[in-house]
Length: 282
Image (cartoon, rainbow, N blue to C red; front, side, top):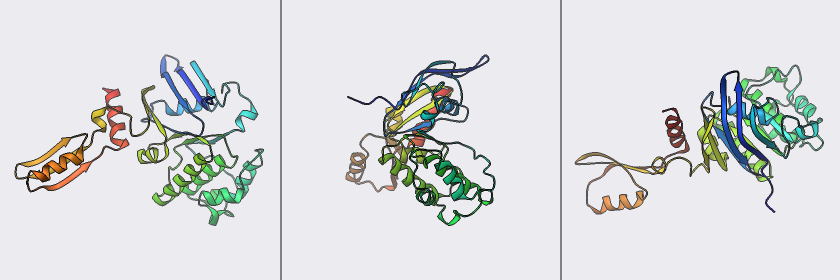
């Protein structure tokens, strides 16, 4: 039998007084899958994630996380989750290793503390007090605390904020290894290249509604996902959308024209995302 979704959301709504923040949000997260939850600031991503984590109550609809309703799930359920919040908490005077070891002791089957510290790139800072770290290094501590408990489901809320490019790439490798081990991951990020690299599927939320869901290479309109061929010749500059860019380039060369500045531009996830957001706002 097909296992049930790790996260199942149906017609989720949230109101604050007369203001509706979520308008019937629905999506699934399958076992071992990484789902990127994308959207502009104020779209409803954080509210959705907080409801699924059990930190905020919903106004309507259904939510199931690891087979339980997050509004009344207990401590054993929480031990199966890993959460990396968008902002760091104050860490006191503990060293990096002490902080990770303290959190590891709260879980029944934690990962090796030193392996986790090394995995987030803080091996050299293991004996440094957390309050003495840079902002980016503190962010890595947050990630270490989120994964040390060996969670079945990992919530990552803007996890690489403050990371330099090299650290982001290393983090991506870590997340892919967690996914390969069977960890289900719900990721929110403003880095569209990050979502494209890490997500098996993405769901785009804007103004409290899911406006697209699917693999990163299949969401959006056909036109938005169609490559463009751009070139210059004696007649001027040309820009043409085509589902067969290779064929068009071959025909152009075969016509004997002298082509300049020839390029094939394949739409990125960011291109498609921006069109979806703009279309929802219009």
